[in-house]
Image (cartoon, rainbow, N blue to C red):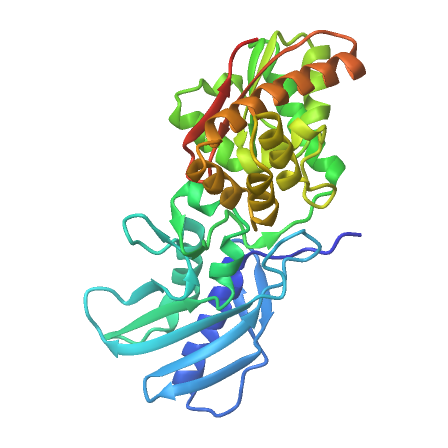
Length: 352
């Protein structure tokens, strides 16, 4: 049976609570664990270390454990630096330290559930006439954020503390696919022209473009299976809307875009460079890039990006239509829109 774990805000709050208790306790002992109210439910979270830094400040460390989910924050240390001060306007102030993202306006990327969790577990411990300032630090957060789509959501320089629950409940691949199938099945009787949003950033771009909610279907990584199901259930057309570093896999015939199964982004971009007259040096530069974003920036500098990504968008549409014809034996019109990490559209194929 898959093992459940906890979401990132839980470990941040546990570290903060441990540090605050340590300050108030005047003990040199490190608490082995703290118990949190998860709203609802409770959790006991192990504490790795606690240290007093000054008379009125302490730091505590927890280690992220998301259970059996495929989560890039697994085993990541989370620090909380807690400072007690004379009461100012608020009893609790939350700050984004190193590795915790900030919004474009400079606000900490600490969202509703996480803030509620801090308040529920820390406010009862704060003495009258005192303010507690909590700075959450993830030493590996900035590096890990480069492997996410945070920038497309306007979260800069680190990871966000978000979620709607403290429990990290693993779902099998089959359960995830079934969830998306049910959404598709509910929408297709009312809308024959669908928009497949690849990932949460695809959903955000769709909303910004004003695409009607009743036509939007999330896909996760299961693009091929859901394309075939849409066609078999009578869809007339599908618009594929996705971040280029994910969706271009379809141009290489990869219809489950999970990086755990296949990842040939740079090779696919390189093939597109060759097809569009790029030099050997351009191909080598793309293959040497660390990410699809870096490859895109290289092609922009070489004035190749427009042609390469237009070709990729057209190839995605063609491959998708052929895939549906092969496995569903029915026609389906497919169009493609690719956007970059910031959500800016970089290529459209609407020629079908």
